[in-house]
View 1 (cartoon, rainbow, N blue to C red):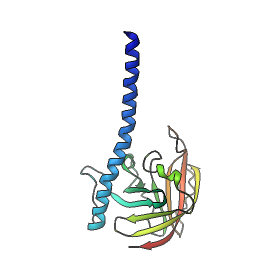
View 2: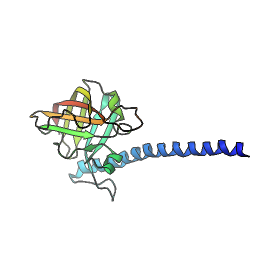
View 3: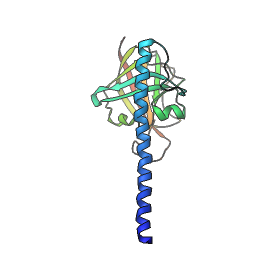
View 4: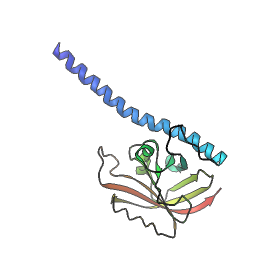
Length: 189
């Protein structure tokens, strides 16, 4: 009897751990669907639309890298709750398309997992919730310490930074960040 309990207990633990991991990815996927709907309504109405009634954040932009089929809705702020559902716009930075650096951050294992596939020269499209559209070209990337990003908040250029934890396949958090830098190439409505 004890020989039977041990494999069953291990199988149950394995199913629970798999379910927990699947839940995180399912939540991220469902959240992006709800965020996409709220974002589309924001663009159509010009109003801030919360994705669900208890949300403490709202969609502010959509990021797309068409070459690799990547898309994510960006939320206002980078609180832990906001980052659980999508990339966040760092408050102290400008909006995409404005003079300065717009910085968006997200988790490496969900919403910014695609950054590992973005190549220098790729076009990154950003549509804001007010309907304004901007195209950036990825021009550099770096791995930096979390407290030494090298981002110049006083720049007079029109820039975009996408940041996430490094390395991409790590299981635990660490002090390093992956920073993808891009420069504005076109604007539109």
